[in-house]
Image (cartoon, rainbow, N blue to C red; front, side):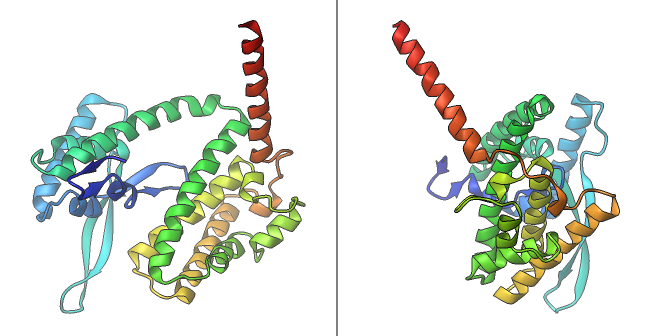
Length: 284
């Protein structure tokens, strides 16, 4: 991992990254402002404006580059105040760091980070639809693994000690009362199999949305205490379930379990690669 002066790592950008229900990455402008060490919002607003203008000039088929949101905050006197913020896609963040103060060390790191992430995501977006169903499962499973890792760090900071109970709170909300063990039994999985390795693409996406929305709530509302964190996870799970229900989607527990787990597919792939390697060695 790249480090500058032993002070910054690219985790500072990962830690404030969010993912929406469609798997798209985004960052909040106010959080990015702090990371990039801009004390004055007005100065940072100018950088955002330059980035948006650059995006409009370079790619004409995209219009809504930033989404304005209003956030309630508490002032020093305890009063509530509404401030303006923006949801920024990865490409705009990339342009922001390109237009930011180059004398700042963290800006140099941001330029490298967003350049790499932009390139990776461009490849993913172009190729995703051509992937097989199993390849899409691998991709979504990777995102859920990353999401759960970040969620656990946030939950731990909120005071969660029993992670199993915390995760079950989310599952119970999304799966109409089912815990991870209930899902395991319903899917008729073998001992120590991972339930997420035995979900199809749509089920993984639903869980990814639950994971990331919970992380956002815990951070945004500064949730403290194990019971409060579990309550938030359960509530988010229920709301994701209701959203699926409202649009007439299939409930997560009704989604078919793939015939093969991702672990099985990995083993088959490895075995095939070994055979191919053996053939090459025989030819030599």
